Picture 1 (cartoon, one colour):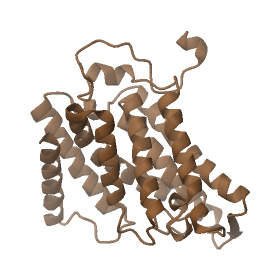
Picture 2: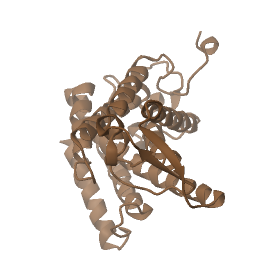
Picture 3: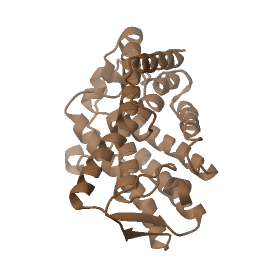
Picture 4: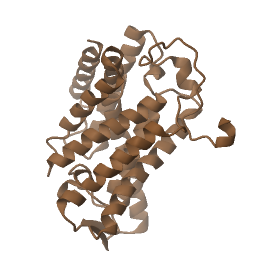
Length: 297
């Protein structure tokens, strides 16, 4: 019920922004419409956390504290590494190559910053919707992993109308939803989950110039080309529709679940996330940033 109420507030917020002329146009690659949708979703989350749950907004996963920059940074690096592993496997088998293209270094740097902002906002929006309050409220009722499976299937369904969509692509997006759920569950941090999401998409589009869920974003200086079989490379949908991505996402999920280097930060623990069985119980929680062994001893 609470998850549906959150979605109702989100739709209402988006409708109000559209009426005020703040929707930003119909171009899906523009920042404005994504940013306004994120603002509406965050506002809905704030209403639910403060008005219904009677807890600080940061308890939803965006805790403002010393851990947040590290969680975002390490998450972004991990997401890029997971995607890089998939593309490395494709390239090592001759399934991808890069050729020179028009552009300048200043133009490339400006493009990289612009796409970093776009993918950061887009990743935050999807994390708020699929790993934020709706997921957390549902997990409290049916359990974390049943909720993760359900929301991951909806996450894949949200991409079903993307260009050049393939069944394996949708299956991999559902698997990626489980990976991102693991990122949240291990840290209770949407900063960290958003970072993993951002790193994956930004590396795919900007660093490697490959399609992101079927969307082409032209990178200056060079062009990425997938030349192997579609079942391995993903074809026109991008790496997410290939078996190499299946292996990378699975390995990334296992690592996130098993590594001892991820925990809730003290900032999150103090705010009492609603997903915890007993959020009032005191729990010692090191930061979500990887901690050296000698410091954990």
